[in-house]
Image (cartoon, rainbow, N blue to C red; front, top):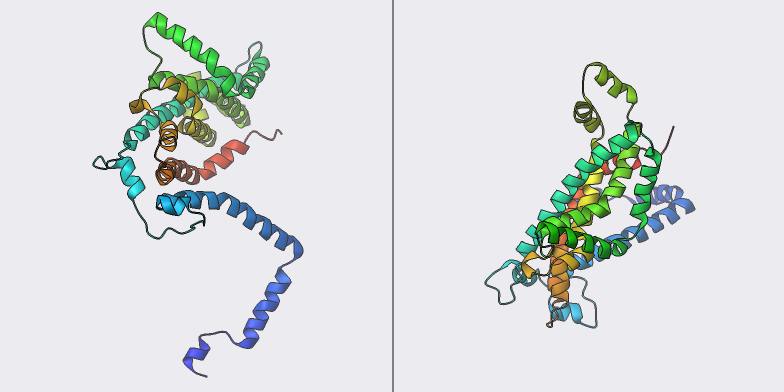
Length: 308
């Protein structure tokens, strides 16, 4: 037997491997593997199609036969988004900055306010505490489209009385997003705070700590998974929100990424590859953030779901 022959498995070894594999694959395992393959394919393929289409030409995207792999990694779509010398320059960097200016403050303010409110509901005893928590959840059940008209009218009146314009105002948009995110953030954190033993906080009170000191030194370090979950949840809502931004923003220089992608899509000259490139840029940061903080999300979303 030569050295080349010894590098490959023999006939008996291949038969043993096939025999072990046949014994391992049962009908439940086969059905589970088939279901998981279909599930992962249905999730990953649209993401792959979006990323690959950003490198395709218009002819490859709009042709009758689907092109699964682009002929070359063309950066034309990305140059249109970011290169000022390009004749079809979209100045997409400004829209990314606008979205960050909205999403990050929304997440931070939502975490701060929901922490204080959820701690009060979970720990302090006062009349109507249960009704407040249930009313918070009921408010969240209303879709955002029902709230946008009264919210816009209320903010417009406040702006007219104080003296600021609600149109093209990113600060106003942040507070409108808080109206959508705070109810569920309060509900999530209040359930999590109930899982933290009261005895730990009572020991802090005996040592002379104030309520604020207990929240800062004891409760917050123990509630990091829930805080991360709330921050990511509110960040993703503000990052992807379209309807409120469409109503409150008129200037192209103030558009967020979802509004700018819609503008590119509705351009008289079809630019599907540019739409896919902008969608890729918008999607990847959220995916990376989700994967990096997945363990906090899993613990934060499941804690408090089971009583006992």
